[in-house]
Amino acid sequence: MTEERERLMAICRQVRSDIVSMIGKAGSGHPGGSLSATELVCGLYFGGILKYRPEDPEWEGRDRFILSKGHAGPLLYSVLARAGFYSPDEMQHLRELGSILQGHPHAERIPGFECSAGSLGQGLSVANGLAFAFRRTGHPGRVYCLMGDGELQEGSVWEAVMTAAQHHLDNVCALVDYNHVQLDDTVENIKALGDLCEKFTDFGWNAIEVDGHDVINVVEAYKIAEALKGAPTVIIANTVKGKGVSYMEGDPAWHGTAPNAEQLERALSDIAGGNGFEKYLEEDYDSEEEAPEGEVSPL
Amino acid sequence: MKEYKAVPMRDGYGNALLKLCAADPKVMVLDADVAKSTRTDWIKKEYPDHFLDMGISEQDMVGTASGMALGGLIPFCSTYGVFLAGRAWDQIRTTVCYNNLNVKLGGAHAGLSVGRDGATHQALEDVAIMRVLPNMTVVVPCDSLETEKATLAAAAYPGPVYLRFGREAVPVITDEDTEFEIGRARHVSGPELRNAGEIADAAIFANGPMVREAAIAAEKLAAEGITAAVYDLHTVKPLDEEALLAAAESAKVIVTAEEHQLAGGMGGAVSEFLSVRHPVLMRMIGVDDSFGESGSPDQLYDKYGLRAENIAAAARGALGR
Image 1 (cartoon, rainbow over the protein chains, first blue to last red):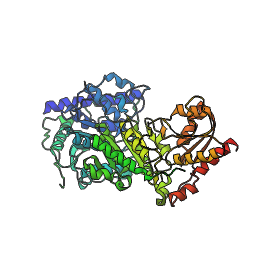
Image 2 (tube, one colour):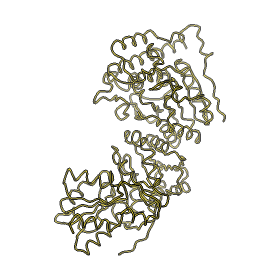
Image 3 (cartoon, chains in turn yellow, blue):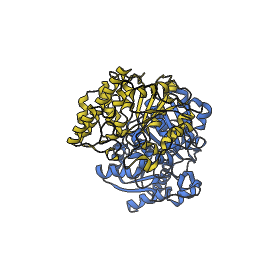
Image 4 (cartoon, chains in turn blue, yellow):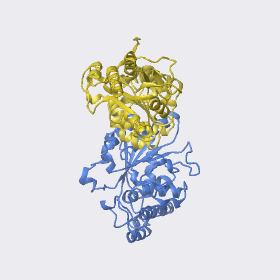
């Protein structure tokens, strides 16, 4: 397991470096919410959970990942590049005229990207629609949807939450990047979400809470979610906005600000040093003790 | 004046959906708790596995339809036009249109025809806010039969389509053999200006129930010695540029007529196109920057100036007669 943890953590370091590098080069972008969700998405793409074929992005049998928090585009841009959907060189052109990597993702341009996003609160409905289509066509795949915590302030999210529960869409797995920070301030100071597990379970969902920076636990959570039938499952990942870059962590200022050259250097140094991840590599670290909470569905 | 049987336009939507569901397992019909009003309850009854009532959640309905389209289905979202185009506009823009998804939008109870429910339920801005969206196609049929044909055509037409139809029974002025093609204006009466050598004093482009009013207006004008060509401009986007240019070249004035705000509607689209490509004197009939109100549809058409006589007067005025 330690070997697998090291393999996945190395990928996460690569992806974090890509995120800050491409945003730094572009001179604008949203580093905080990409860095906080890195383990969530890397665990999905590189932990053997999501079924996809980089050489055949439109492969019918693939699972689907819907990025609802479109401002985390750079995270997906790196993940898709490192998964082999396109050349990592594309990341040099983030936010440039004619680039496949727009400021917020335009799916038509990006191999492997399923649905454009940027206006919040829309992705979970899309995921539900795909789940209905899978059910209707006998497709065995699963649909994952990543949302931000601030995004849950959009009322349309809760419309979709009700739909998935009403129709027992157990092929839907929602991911909440609970990093507690939004653009203006902390989520708690603006419109607090309270007990998210309880909110979702009250709505008829299964809920799993994980340390969103423990990539092995994240992968385990996906496996538990897949085994839960009869209701959709949400994975609530406790995360830190800007995770891995010391001066960005927990600071709303880094929701949508690009690092300058000097800041980028410090960011890359932090990431290479594994800032804040040491505990996950300690020899006596026992992932069993911090295994995800089981389902708390009232079903 | 020829008498026509009056049928609610939404019946055409329901009839088309019945045919589509019978023929194609990919067709899905979604509604937002107004299935009895939009006639999608016919699908609920006949083809329940093709039907999904999303509840009072227009945004979620459009988002869910988007996912269905990504999964290869052909979803039809159905509710009052005012809520479909208005409440779910951002989903329609960013998810449906930006992704160019094969989502069909059935905007029912449009215009003043919803009558006594009053202004909150009368879609008078929906064409404007739909036609400004890239990748969107906007179709406003004139009667129940044309609504049926438009709905069938929309299913086969790639990409997002907004269909707009009214609640009330309106005279069925087309028949089974009347041609319908998305993007091609239908010649209704008077000279066919697309034919070389044909001319007219006025060309009237109307859509929705105003096509019938335009045809009556042309008869009135003919009695006064004014020749008018009447077209059903059911497709507001993409515009039939060929028909509009032919009319601008062969008629002295152009009049548009629609059950919608003057600003941003079909008349606006015609004006945007012709003012650049072939400037011509125009008059526009529609609702003039006003909300509607409760009343019978007939009372409202009278009050808001959506009658044949208003169209005829506009043509006369433009011609200096």
